[in-house]
Image 1: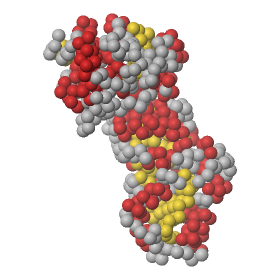
Image 2: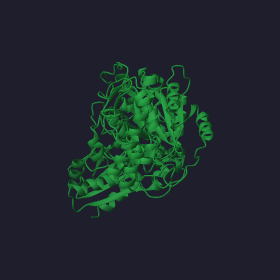
Image 3: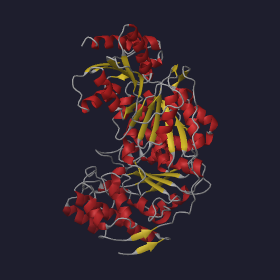
Image 4: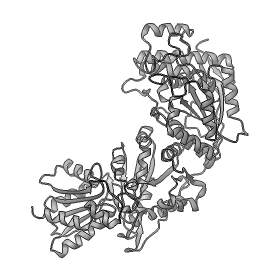
Length: 624
């Protein structure tokens, strides 16, 4: 059978040929590239052949069609299999598969990315595809009432990742019967046997314990796979289904079957030739399985946003203003959704939950899943805001890191940052968060100092692509700005300025208020200080910083409630050096030690970032 175009309905006899083709093409593509994972692809070929020919409802000519099912390869290293599927359905040609896989400048990368229109999220960092799939399935089930399904292929090795179990837990909590997980249990990982090997009872017990239904099948019995997928798509399900498929790594080529020696290795030319022959030779079948249902998406047209206003001088915590701004944005824009990690009464995302409960998703204390669900929701075009204590976002760093590769737009909000939080102690104090997000490709980092700027920047976050992070403060501080002020991303505010300024004070969040106090102290001593609110840390307002430093003889004090590395000081220094500033006299005040418990006042003083220390640094600089 070759060079045929076969339409739905497709019999299992054809499916068997497709499975062989997928194995052959996995061998051919990786051999031609000189790298790849053919053995991990061969073990799952029967699962994908049955899925694509008989169950995946997809309009391959319209990958953006609203009713399409979603297919996510959580085991992204099996990319030869995925790309062979794309050839089998006719959306890429054999030439591209053979000459473009893993080559510089080509789109068939070593692990799948959304440079391909049929790929929703980048995978390859194991444990991420299924959590992302939860977000996509949430959109269908809770926001769109849509019939599309989300199919996720996992490897058995990644089932030791905690994020997989966070995902199954939340899938069960939210009743995501439209999420079908297929696990390729081929027994072998990178360097040998996996933790559970072929102990299918143990896998099933774990899956059931997290609230899903386990279906155990022979992963090379096409009829059994077909029956399992039919059961997984029944309309009367009460919980998600996980298909646990017992498979053999390298299936189809006896020389490498169930061998621990062939993970991540292409077959050399002679063995590739033998494998292709054993599998029955090259095939060039083209198949088209079930069509996607015709679905009309929800009306998501936004209206004008009415932001809240605050009286200047009133004390309002920026975390409270975040909740106010999020509610205002949600009222105006049905695309806006919110997620939180069981601290919404502190981040103030609970305000959104109370007013717009259908668009709020509690992820409980599962920060990885929170960020992953936001990623999945963004796949469906939603503007997802995810909030927790800033310190705990570090748990989800790998999901944040992968977001730019996926082209995902994430709005992350971290509250209770820095030593300012006081008595809770160092385990709760985010002192690395600005650096973590700033190092993320294409990210935006915002750190407002008052309520007015916070609500304006919440609105700006919705319109800013990529990973956007806002750091909010626990304590309540005076409102500095009136309602007519604007806060563009990449801007700053000059709060104190005269023609006689001799030093520049730079702060953000709590340290801006400390800088203002320091400026008052210095003014009483006859020292005029220019004060800049760098509410946008990335991108930073280089022009304003350069002008201020030039006006104040190169003297500048930067104070931040963050470790010295990677935060406001680093951003300021990089900007000034990059602008060619010479004769710079800079004092960088940051948190250098491990703090303990205490009051905010005590801890800011201990860290050397309070008004007294800022003023002292300014006096030192004025001696130059």
